Length: 132
Image (cartoon, rainbow, N blue to C red; front, side, top):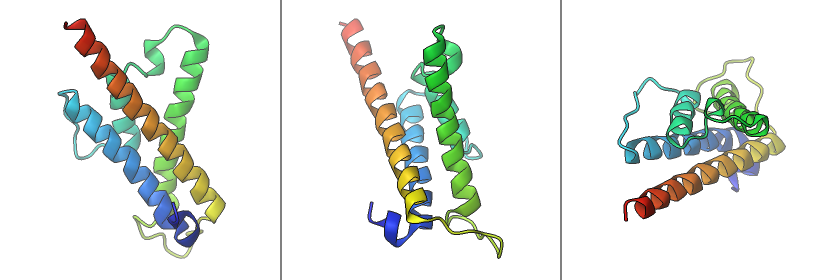
């Protein structure tokens, strides 16, 4: 959290890495596999399908909308990491992130990661109950 102000670029990279790691764990724990070439949006898309959070898996427009926006947030975090985080050299045209941008990115990534983890735990518990 401190990196948001002391190292905004690193904080953005860490936020994206958090989402990547959470998605990979859920995919693996579900018994599915991920490919090394998958980026954060692809990992999230596969995780969302496993958790039944993909917009296409819902009928209600409000759920489609919010789940689609979650997908957009994850895609944007991945793009921010690639464009301005410290994971890749940006050259002279690279504009460093301000602390407020890093704070927004970290907070959104944290919220998404927590939502995915809580949803995974709920699905596991539902499965456990239905098996008994």
